Image 1 (cartoon, helix red, strand yellow):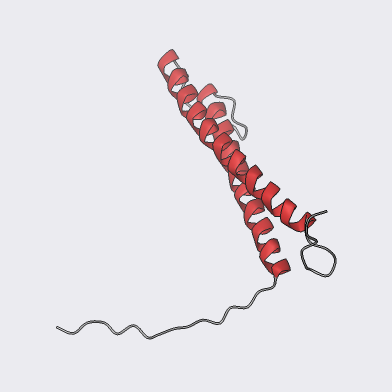
Image 2 (cartoon, one colour):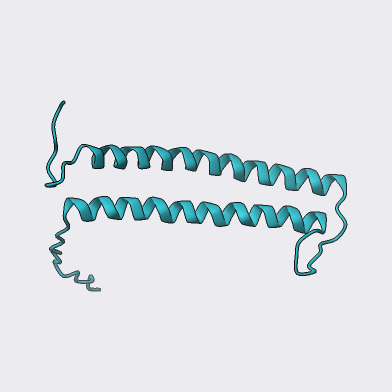
Length: 112
């Protein structure tokens, strides 16, 4: 039996420092948007359980175990989202610091 032949691909990718910073900022923004969608879905989950979701969609009447399960599920998702948000804030601060240390010509300004 023969083995697959993978061609040797050497991509030539060339991006500037500004391109890299813009890509980093864009990736942070997209992750923030994803978190916003997740949090919105968690809110709709609670509304569905309580029977208050708009568009006339109602779930079965909740009982105490249902409410406790939803509460636990939403709390876990909020905890995970908070951790992710802290990481994104750190990334944003790092990128902001890099931008602040760059002068108008694109080079580092060095220590003050």
